[in-house]
Length: 249
Image (cartoon, rainbow, N blue to C red):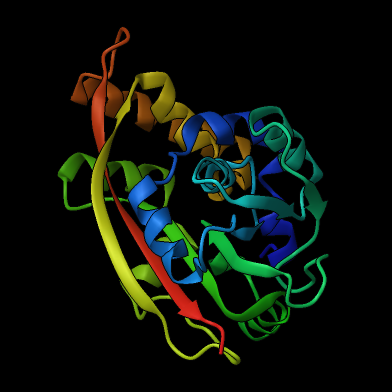
C-alpha cells in the first residue's frame, strides 16, 4: 500500500486534470469558516495548507484575505500560480508549515485534512495561528443519495475523505478542542469531459494499473451514455459541502 506521503503527492502528475475536474467551494461555506477570525476591518491573514491547484485559495483571496498557499507538490503549486496569480506559494506540509509563529488569523484545509497526521498538524496550526484564530476544514463530497451519483462513485472508487465523513467525521487534537460543523447542498453543471476529468483526478485512478484504468474509462463512458452526458450536454452533479471550524485558545 502506498504511504501517506506518496498518496498526498500523487496528484501533481495530473495537476491540470485536477484543476478541470474538481469543483470550487461555495463562497457561503468559506465565509462561514472564516467568520470567527475577523477582527475589525483588517484583511485576514490566511494560510491555505494542502492548497493543491488553488481551488480554495481563490475563494479566500476573492473574499479579501491576504492568503498564502502551501502544498508538498511542486507541480500542483505551479498550476496554482497560473490560476491564482500573485499569491505567495511555499512547499510544505500540514506537519511542517513554513510560516512564523502566531502570524495567521486562519489556517484552512480544502480536501486535505484526511491526509494529515492529526496531532502534528494541529500542533503546527496552533503554532502559526494567533490566539482566537481559526482552524477550518472543508470537503466537497458528491451526494450519493442520487442513484447515478452512487454508480459514479462505484466506478471510480470512494475516497478516504468520503469514508471519514460517513463515519465519525474529522478529528482534531490540542490545542484545538472539538469542531463546529455546517453543510451546504448544491449542484455543479458537468459535461462528459468534466466527468472524465473528475475521475482522472482521483488518487485511486491515478495509481491504478493500466487494466484497471481502462475498466474505469469503459464503465464511466457507459454511465455517461446512460445519463445523457453526450455531445456537449450538461448534467447537474449534486454535492454536499462539509465545513468545520475550531478556535485556537
